[in-house]
Length: 266
Image 1 (cartoon, rainbow, N blue to C red):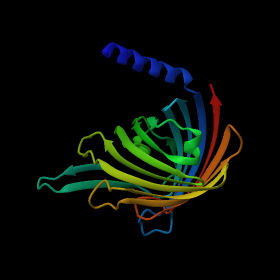
Image 2 (image 1 turned 30 degrees about the horizontal axis):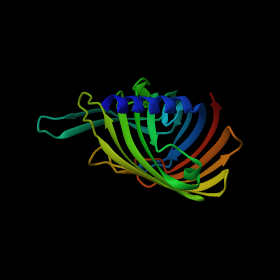
Image 3 (image 1 turned 60 degrees about the horizontal axis):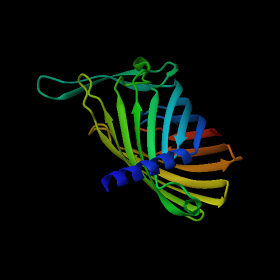
Image 4 (image 1 turned 180 degrees about the vertical axis):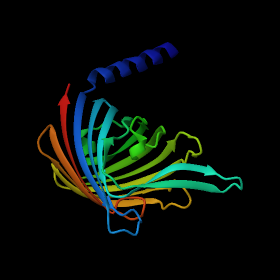
């Protein structure tokens, strides 16, 4: 009996793999961030991020890689050291950088699994779960502030629900960093709430809110919101955009973004 059950499970797995539809998606995105980050200054910090990512999907699995190139002008406060003195007090040393900075950011590797399998019923009215993990590899130059020199991991669980033309989703996650000399792990929880309304099949408009615990007790929590748009140009091309605002001093005051995607069925 046990042999029969194992053979049946293996047969189902092979059938799922054989029926899986593979696809490759290429994304190019650009984001512009601006803000004073809590400083009493008339000069804002401007950051332009161009990112290229490639994602491979088979059945319910997805594997992705992304690399960003950053250009930044304006004042920037960088933490260069953090330690405890002889009395046990935490000491942080900062430097101010005001020159233009350009360079690659840390690359990211992401993997996700979603269930159940998407069907025509789901696209009209149904729910979906997604579990994901991301690894941020510290390969960028930390002298310009584009890397903190620490490995970082993100794990999240997402629940989305479709109601005809309306989509709702909630993501709960946690962020870890490796310990570094004189620096703690600072593990943090975060949440994202999103909604999207589709007045027609290829066009969507929506909003999202993001909140994340602060990395230290004296620092504000991360809080931001955005208005989002989506346009499926044709079967393989899509364009999306967002306009966002930060609600705390640790994030930019404004952000504008565009994302262009193309997919290939393999």
